[in-house]
Amino acid sequence: MPQQVPRLLAVFAVAVTALFVMRQKLIPDTFGAVGHYRAAAVESLAVRPVKYAGYQACEACHPELAEKRLSGNHRGVACETCHGPAATHAGDPAGAKPVVPDTRQFCVTCHAYNPSRPTGFPQIDAVAHNFPKPCTECHDPHAPVPPVVPGECSACHAQIWRQKAVSHHAQLLCTTCHEAGEGHKTSPRTMRPTKPMAREFCGACHASAVRAADRVPQIDLAAHGMPYLCCQCHYPHYPETR
Amino acid sequence: MIPDPTVPTGPGLTPAPSDGAEPTGSAPQPNPEEVNRREFVHSLAAACASGLPLWLGAIRVPAQDPGPPGAPGQDAADHWYGMGVDISKCIGCGRCVYACKVENDVPMEPGCFNTWVERYVIDTKGEAVVDSPDGGIAGFPSAPLDPNVRKTFFVPKLCNHCAKPPCVQVCPVGATFITPDGVVLVDEDYCIGCRYCIQACPYGARWFHPTKHVAAKCTFCYHRVRQGLRPACVEACPTGARIFGEIEGRATPLARFVRFNDTQVLKPNLNTRPKVYYAKLDMEVR
Image (tube, rainbow over all chains, first blue to last red):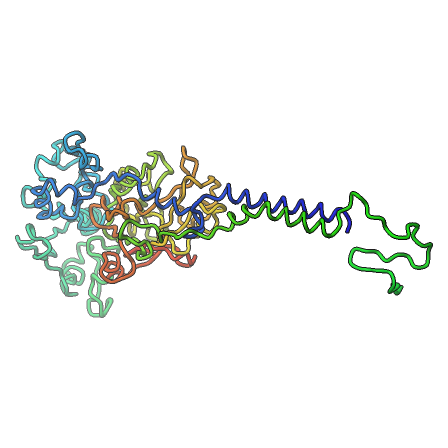
C-alpha cells in the first residue's frame, strides 16, 4: 500500500472528528428537539412581560365601571383601548396610574369625520363640534350617548350627509325621502327610518313635466331601466348623472 | 497487451513491464517508513476509537422531549391559531398599532411595524391609492370628500402566520420557524440578521430591528396567548374588527367569524396558506 493512503485516511479521520466536534459546539442544545429550530426559543418568547392586562383584570377592581361600560355604546371597547397599557397598574394599583385621556385630541382619534370610516360610525367635525370643550364635559366616556337627542341626521350619518351636500340632491332634506320617527333618535337600530321603494317616488320629480322646467333630468318611467328600482342603479345620496 | 497472469495486478498496481528488463530488486524490501496492512488497520481503529465519544455525542437522540412547548395543561399541538379581520368595522384609529408597539417593545420609529393600517382610496376609474402615514399609529387625517373617489376604507395588516411560510423556508440557520400551534416566530438569539426572510415575505410583514440587528415580526402576542390573553391589537381594537382564536373546531370566536362571513386571504395564489382571514375584502387589496 502506498504510504499516502494511510496519511489521507488519517486526514479524513481528523476532518470527520472535527466535523462532529464543531456540530457539538455550534448547534444549540435544543435545536431539532421539536422542529428545525431551537425549542428553547419558544419558551424565551413565551415568558416576555405582558403590558396590556386585559379588561378582565380591570373589572376585578372596577366592577361599577365595567357594568356601566357594558350598558352603553362603548361595551365593545376594552378599558386599555383608551386608558393605555395597564399591567403595571394592575400589579401596583397605588403606584402606577393609567392614562386618563380627557382631551378633545384623543376622542377624535376614532370619532373625527373621515370618509374612509364605515358609514354609520358616529363621527363629528372636530373643528365645528362644540370647540374647545373637552368631550367628557358632555359625554360620559364609559357609556357615551349624545347629551341631547340629535336634531340633525348628520350627527350620526356624517358620511351620507357630506356626500349629499356635494351632490345634485344637496337641496333636498333627509325627510324629503325618509320618514324617521322620533324613536329612531334614541333607538336607532330598532326604529328604522323608511326608504322610498317605488319607482314612482323618484318619478315624482324625474318623470314630471312640471320639474322638467327646473332642469331636473327627466326619464320615461315606463321604459327607463325596467325592471329595477331607481336606487338599484343610482345612489340617491350622490346621484352620478350629471 | 494482455497482462501476464503471473504478475500480480490489482487496483492501484501497475503491471510490471513483461518485455523489458526484470526489476532490479528481486523482492520489494519492506520500507521501515511504510505501514503494513496490519499496522494500518490498527492505527485506523485507534483513530476512530479516539473520535468515538464525540461521534456518540454528535448523533444525539433527543432526550425524552417534554412534548411541544406549552404552559402546564396547554399542549401546543392542540392549537392552530389564526386571526380574522372585518374590513367593514375598521375605523382607522390606529389603537392596534399603538398597542402592538407598546406590548412588544417595537421601536417607535418608521418602518418598524408588526401591524399597521392602510387606507385604500379607489377612484371612479378603479385605480387604488394606498397610504399608511406612520403605520396609522395616530389615525389618518381626514381626506376631503372627492367626487372622483368611488370608495375608501381601511385595511389592517399584519403577519399572516402562513401555514407554509416562505420566510421560514429561506432562513439559512433555522432562526425562524412555525410552532406546532401555528405561530411563526423569530429566535432573536439565533438570528444572524441576513434579511433573507424580509425579502421572502410576500406581505412585507417583517422588518429589521434597528438596535438588535435581527429580523422581527408579529408574534400573535405569543406571550399573551400562552397566558390565555388576547393579542394586544385585538384587545385594543374598539370596534371588534379583529378576531383572534382557533381556526379548527366550531365553538371559537374565529371559527364563528369564518363561518358567518365570506372570508378571503391575501395573495392566495402564492400558496402560502395565510391564517389571517379578511371579511369584506376588496379585490384591490394586495
